[in-house]
Length: 87
Ligand SMILES: [Zn+2]
Image 1 (cartoon, rainbow, N blue to C red):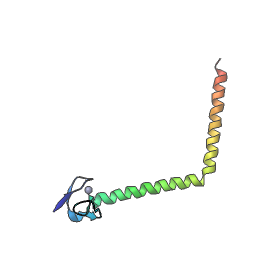
Image 2: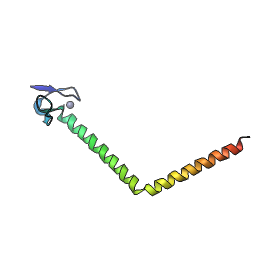
Image 3: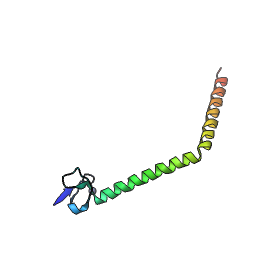
Image 4: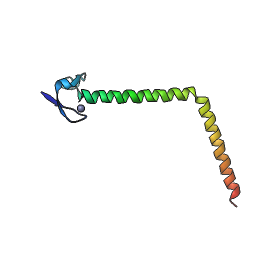
């Protein structure tokens, strides 16, 4: 008996699908092992990436705020200069 993977669309034997989904009629997941592990890998990576970014932000929040303030001030002064130049 084979089953079609919902991800890659290939027909594969049931053994190629992880058990887990209780909703599906055969108790197997919709994506094959290859696609499933790829999915997990991508998910893990993105969560890790987000967490790293969040940690960086928290660690450098003072610098980021300072940078934003300086950038805003710089932008404002540039706009003021431009207004002075225009007759
Ligand atoms: Zn697949």
